[in-house]
Length: 572
Image (cartoon, rainbow, N blue to C red; front, side):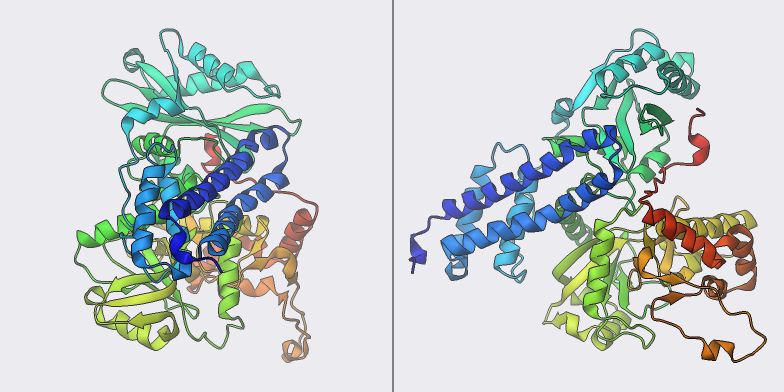
């Protein structure tokens, strides 16, 4: 038996950093292959790579923790030992280009060793060891283009820099489209003020598109822009659109989309560049969008602690209809909701706690196509008791007692999800100040969301409009996952048309049978909303529609949902 007193802390610190470096190297290998997958239109491989990259973190963590347990007997070390490990680790990452990600990996190891029951800055990086955002690092990750000549010549230089192994469908047309679009956004006087154009060296890949992200720099401001590239059916590149509106840019990095593949050795500098283009986005949202979702979770927690220190409102039950599976609450001054699995579900829910957890994992790994909210999963999350409203305290004790522990000062939530806050669609549609156009737009987008989720091979299950939220940009997003499944797991059937009033009673119904004709009775409750929905999306009430989607999926078709209005796409 090894003597646990003989292990210097620096050996454990080095083992953790070695585990991170291997994990990051494998992560970068998967990401770097995104260009080749795009050029070869390997869309199924894109989805597999995305899932593989998400799973990689846990696999690397398990491997690192197992190695530490076998070599260093961490369970026998005293707290002082782990304090020294952290100090040694800080020294090791002093010049590390991904030191902030390494700190998160270190936290994950310590969390696993202590079973997430000791979250303290003495042995973890609850707070960062130093600021990782530094404007002076941005030049490392950008290509700079001079603008002394015409807009068209600048765009031509950009296309030469970001070249692919496949030809353009129509190079001259795309040059004209991009140049004309930029010129339409800037008058001659403004164009003379342009000093340079900067683009991130990393091409951002997601779905069936590649994105060149940059800015037009002027003395007092910069204009963000994104050149969106896609492939034709013949496998040739074309420019689908140019985005310059910050709203479109924000939606591109939305929380309901899959993570980008963007190859970089300097994620902090990339995030800093993006932060300047998207000042309303939190750093944790940008790290998450880049695929560093674990570090996004770390930065979120730090942001949460800062917000708690600078606010005094209380946690309350979230607005909306109470869920049968999840207890949802929020801090009114903060932009997320907190979700805890209830101890017992409503009678209509034929699922278990493990089923719910598995379905949240499914969504994490799936292409969310801009219609399913991403989540962060937490263990042993502490809330100060004096910041919890009486109504929420009562609800947690009555419905979530198995998931919480209460001491003198805090409630400890053993397992929880956090999710971006949205306005529940049912509450939105009840607002008195809505115009008829507002209502029709939201109802239309609800049906569009259902269709796109289905086309992405997910059957939403419980499609009551209370299970959808609407963002500040007017997009309808699904956030209730306890009944989701793959489309192939459902049998869509027509209702029997029979004069016999007892026909349904004698109909043989299997657990996986679904009758789309019944959807109109429960997706939307009020009569005038049902009428609008039926007018705009009557095809959703036909089993043939759903069977057709199943058939396309069975053939291997992959949906690509552009994250901007169809009207903005260039004509080809």
